[in-house]
Amino acid sequence: PMRSHLALERRSTEIASRAALNVNCMTWSQHESNKDLMVYGTTSGAVTVVDWSAGTEDLNNTPLKYGTRPCTRVVWNPLERNLIAGSFDKLRSEYCAMVWDIEHGGPGASSTTATATTAATAATAASDTVQPGLTPVFKASYQEAASCVSWVPGDPRLLLVATAFGYIRIFDMNGSRKNDVGSIMAHKKGSTSKSRGISVRPSPFDSNIFASYTDTPGD
Image (cartoon, rainbow, N blue to C red; front, side, top):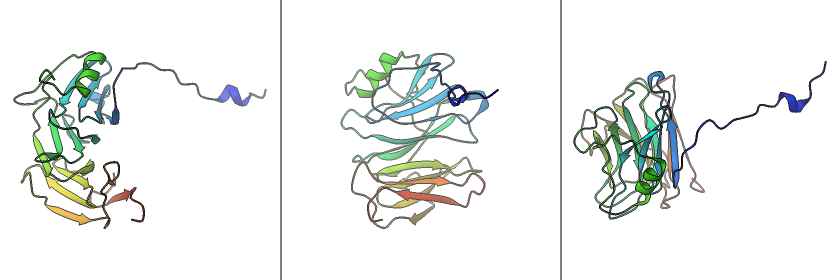
């Protein structure tokens, strides 16, 4: 017998939800052992890891008290399950790309079981009562707005950072935090707008190949 078109349509069901303010980017963990973990970044600069199975949240990065800079992208390391990288808009005297170790956070690390209300409050607060986040294990792109960040496939210590000036910079976590080990002028016009920049995506099959795109008109 013939089945109607409507009968063949997939129906989605919401299995969980959380309240979070001003989410700007998010991604799932790529590891089977962390399959219920998700990380998201907000327009205020907060970076939070959600454990859907446990119903908890851990604040990785605390919004700065003296300024607001959006988190433009968060990405999980494809080889090392404990490493998360994030990119941020420019703010004076600050690094715009950071890496956190969610299993060995170091001094100042917090392992909270915040409710959705607590996480939302932390994401927008600018007072001395904001909970501390994890201490970054690596920082790069000093005073240069980072519109995107990606890991180099096959090498868990190499980080690609796309900047608002049109560059794609490669940083080695084992090397200098301020100086890149390689850079490419991918888009000559760059961007002067906080809402624009360039994005970079590496090939999952060849660590020497990556693509970039920009939303800057005329570039």
